[in-house]
Length: 231
Ligand code: SF4
Ligand code: SF4
Ligand code: SF4
Image 1 (cartoon, rainbow, N blue to C red):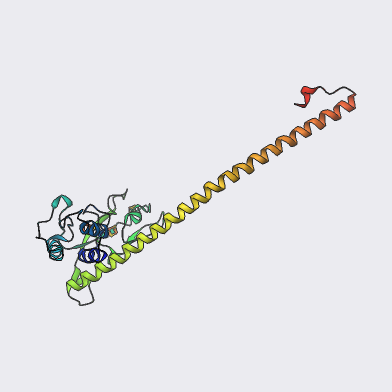
Image 2 (tube, rainbow, N blue to C red):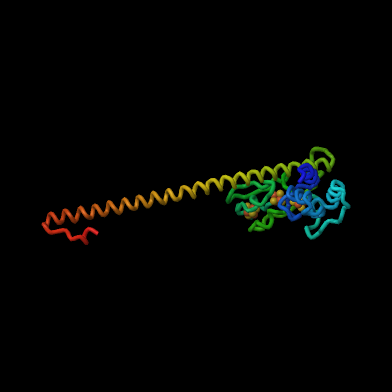
């Protein structure tokens, strides 16, 4: 698999990171195209323009968008959270592929509109149904005075970087969890062993105390100790 080809394909993809192509992120779709495991017409956000660019890059004829993967959206949208209803469950944060939602547990959450790709992935997990997509005017939103294509590329590059950063963070968290689980698993037998040892010690001490009491009583009453009394 040529890394250069994957980079070139990935550079064409819009970086919405929505998963509509059937892959969890643009990069994995790029890899699948490069390996011949996926067709070039599976990305609704990229639409016909993206398919055309992929066809040119790969030297294959363009084809219509495969709408079983969804339909392209007209204009840019971003997610918006109704803060009056949000219960702060954090489900939306966990599902956002570019970390565009901020908020802590049990507190209201908000979307950083400038980072939102409009992927819709936060909508379904919200138990309060308080996230909606609202249209934004790309040109009004853009204060850089760059051509729309240039700002689209900037936004895609930014979304790619945020997606990669998130993936690295998730991988690091997984690694930490694996390590702590490993530590727990090795620590648990030690804890269990120590508890068993302490229990044994207590039983022995109780038995000694009981034997001493029986012995003292036997001496005081001058009566013989019966073996079953010591057990
Ligand atoms: S934008 Fe969505 S559908 Fe297009 S390649 Fe990226 S993840 Fe797949
Ligand atoms: S806020 Fe929602 S729509 Fe926007 S990028 Fe995150 S998950 Fe996607
Ligand atoms: S999923 Fe919905 S209710 Fe939960 S924190 Fe996000 S917006 Fe609020």
